[in-house]
Image (cartoon, rainbow, N blue to C red; front, side, top):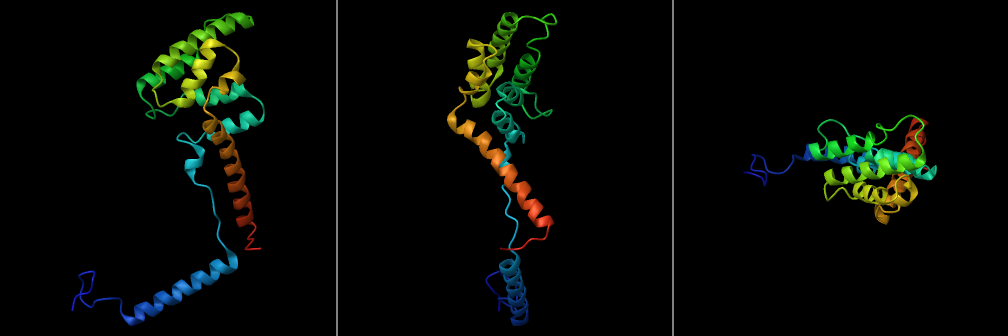
Length: 181
């Protein structure tokens, strides 16, 4: 006689079923006694695994660093040529200025680079586009530019920091061998 899986013998043999029940019972008891480490998944840390870095910069009130993390060049092959060119334009925004250039010269150079970068950013690059739109109007005003990023995205950066802290605490607890309670 064939079982539902199409194999001879039908359902699991009784001895296999008993072994399975025993294994499940042992696992359930261990889970009940010890618990398990429940980590936040990698999706919390963004496509490029740098979302928490932006959050740390924001918590440190360092919006320039937050912008730089979002706009920095990504791993080879991670983005199309237009996005790579846009990020490179942003990175080199001050390269044509003499050392010690005044704030006005830096502001103008940044506004120009932001406009150039904006042309290469895809329509779904919400954070990058918001930042570049803000900085093309008000160069060097990183806090205001960061405010151009949608609120949900800004919160995501802070949630990534919370997730990182949780994961580190859970790992430390697991290394100590702490069970439930």
